[in-house]
Image (cartoon, rainbow, N blue to C red; front, side, top):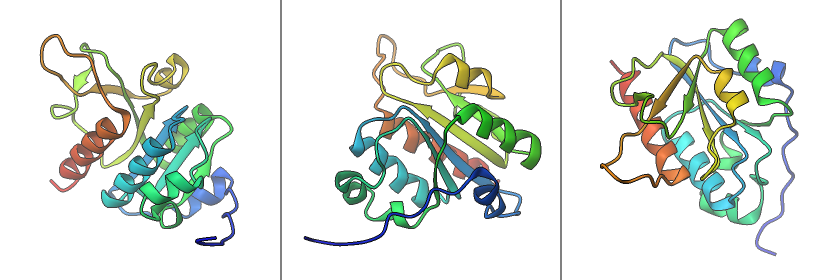
Length: 176
């Protein structure tokens, strides 16, 4: 045994939202069907590094699985996590009640390039699994769509790398 601990309780959306900062700039990361524990761990580690205040997980692998914890460098215990029963309900609440803008990250060349997007100061960045990406239902509940432009003829995006790039772009735009 390397460690022993208690799994934090899953907060309801009201409690998770009440703990969000009331400052002008706030980032929430939403993950849908990200089932690779390495992806979960790296994305949570990046979320902590870029100052995210909450990570929402819907139908994702266990963020407290040993590999996810290790890869996150323990950040799963430092950043609030919420297992969402219905991500679209959470997105709608964050948008209507708390003034967040929901941003779908997509692999669509017609979407706005992330580095050209007018990113809001209070945002939910939503990411889907490698391959299928976000569901059409989740995308429909977002205010805008952004993409990371790639070299011509390339279509490969790694979920954890793409999430890190998008969070970095948000953190840079929120400082201006």
